Image 1 (cartoon, rainbow, N blue to C red):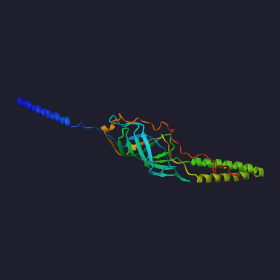
Image 2: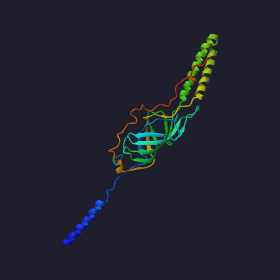
Image 3: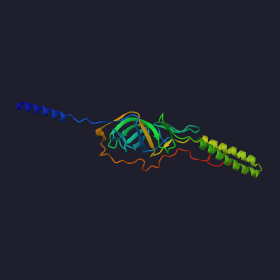
Image 4: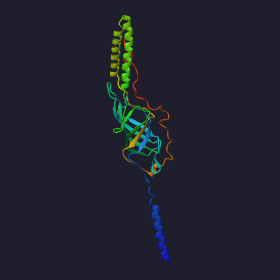
Length: 255
């Protein structure tokens, strides 16, 4: 009997040693393709001075959860790259650029390379988003050009009529003035670029993941993470990309 008890003791000791030697399996958290992540711009972007290859810096503003666990907390940093840019033309065309997202860094320093594209813009921004291509375009300004021509034509007609009345030909003076004003306005519009595409610091952008991003449970400890700073706290919001309303060529034509 003593021998049997000894054997059982040895067996239990072996089982206990094996259990202690087997490490507890860590859980993995998978952020699926198609997940939407809202971000805030840390630096501004404009087709006026940006070039392909320029970096864009953003931070997340809303927690992303997987199985009830926060895996991408607010204050996570995202880095992107301007891959293509076009200045607006002088006759037609709008400013546009393409933004590619490259990497994600959690507040504790855990970093992942990933791919994502823009799927939404701040409702206050005047820019337009091509959802299929992920291209951000400035708004058009046809109405502004028409208004400029109309205002300058009217101003020219008024001055022409005044000058014509002095010489006894008010109608002819008004016609000549209107023509000169329209020509001056058209020349100004033709020589002026359209509006640039601008996303100001603090603009909210929503990105959508193009591939899965996986984290181990051990990578999601944020107890010693740096405190979050809000990218939008000192921002004035998105800037409109409208043309300045002015009379071309900047003064009333003289006759």
